[in-house]
Length: 469
Image 1: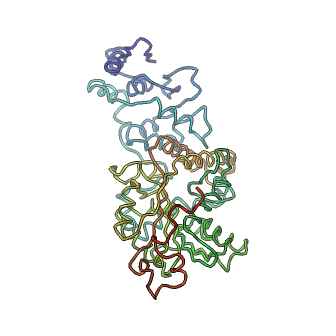
Image 2: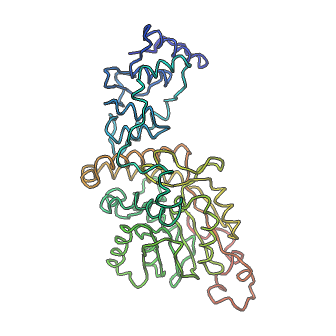
């Protein structure tokens, strides 16, 4: 094992000292153990205990957190996959074990890695020795775990990106896992979007109910109004509005969600006011809605389709109607929208994220007026914390229902996403918009019906926000 107790602490020389010391420790053969390879790449700064199948180890012996590389296949996954994908493949396949955390919530381990581990590229000579030590055979790509979706270039067989057929398949991959599994993770609300916590100690169910209340109030809904909820999930927003006398229609591309939502609507006695249909939002023919809610759909639309998306939703609204868009974003508008390797292959195939500025610009460019915007990223971190707690509580049942690899994917994805929201790597934005055109702006327009006269255009709205935060 290579130790780094006596290394230089000057940041400018630490990496070179690391490479020099490790090279000397290998002898003339230039062979490294797997633990030494990791120390070289990490500059000797390991926040956890690492052990490997070759008998080597690194990191503090008494560290509460650990990684155990169990097989050569795991080395191949780590060495041949970019970014977080290799780590995910080795972990999901069982070739990389974690210790000190529960697989349903590996957040402490991921946080330790994010806070302390910085990989650097060693000098060329050292890289050659690393490759020789690992072995050329371990650098040849192998088949990924069966839970992994195909790479993007192979998905073309199912249609072009964000075609109706390919979108349906992407939704099926993530949302049709098992309604029973989702009930354990999401809790009674069956709501798979960011909650809004009224207090730091609020429960998950209370926070989800509060989120629906916030959306309902922002949209100024009242009994007799008509609401369209696109990407409605298990129908939470549809049922919330229907309980308050609003005629609500939801649409989802998940058959599992559709069946669950329709059953819940019937059990609550809301069938006269609420409907959930299986289908693509682009196939909705009804128009004249007082409000449209889109809660967690935009991430699946594709950035190049934003203009047509906002134009379509605007066309479903009556003049003066309101649209609330709630979605995950990046903290800036420069990064390419494609998701990272792990998220794209295991969680949201074809998912894309961009900044709130890009989203607002696209909405404005089709004629929608922006009334309000806010970032709820801290609330999403709390939501993910509570989802992970639910998964831990129901871990044995979840594994029996969906299998160990899939359960591990969910723990890793949710804990990693929580870290992303906490660190401002991703955000959650709600944007409130209005359809404002010449017909609704003209107060004297004789064609405006009573509802438009009462609520009218953005110019007739209250001067300050009308909802409780």
